[in-house]
Image (cartoon, rainbow over the protein chains, first blue to last red):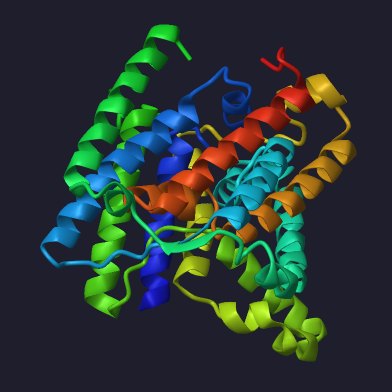
Length: 174
Length: 180
């Protein structure tokens, strides 16, 4: 059951990633060179719609949140490493698989690299657990908790910032 | 706005908004049916897949590794989600006739030439670095970027900022400003 739902959600997700043209190396590196905001338009639209839905469903007790730990050192170092690798590969983990499906054969080598990177991380994990993963770990935190604000105020702020950014992208034609 | 299954592309705002709805539906349906909220994510599946491969070579080594013990090697929701991405993207590109064989992308070719071997080596090295980074950070643009930010998680916003900072800096250094 669990696997069947995963497959179905993945099918829809892959379909939308492809139709939105965000699977392409040119779009991903185009964003990093600040020439093409397609992937940001796609991602921010998803996040803005998603935050309204998640907090609405959470408010009525339909679902629960699943927040990842705020381990600052690991996120900063890991995030920067991710960015460097992302610029070279031109894909992130989710998009690499979809890119291969739309004919971008070179994504295969990126996927092979990711599997190797995962194996290397498993070897490095005991060391990380004693160092980067415990440095500056503030646990599970949300923005409404940190700023002591209603989540809806935070969501409205994000929506205003998002719409302003979208208007700017369209004006600049990027 | 053309939302036909046969059109080659959809408006990115609209396709993104539909992903937002899909992400919420996924959490609601998994909560109701399997009593576990499943938020979108992808990078853990690469750990599980590499564990499956390693297991066939050296099962003792894998069973002793603390990360594999913590992550538990299994074909789960997320692994099938990643398989689904392949299927969905394949279907969309076939229906819209937008699939394209590509061994070297144009921006890469401008900087490093048309050699598919050089591109393969680059893609591999990039893949190694990015997945190591994603696991250290605790997620990728799906798990942190989409799911984390939808939940207004501090970790999600922090990760996304550093993914982008690293990517923008590295891309400018690697491809130069004129990568367009």
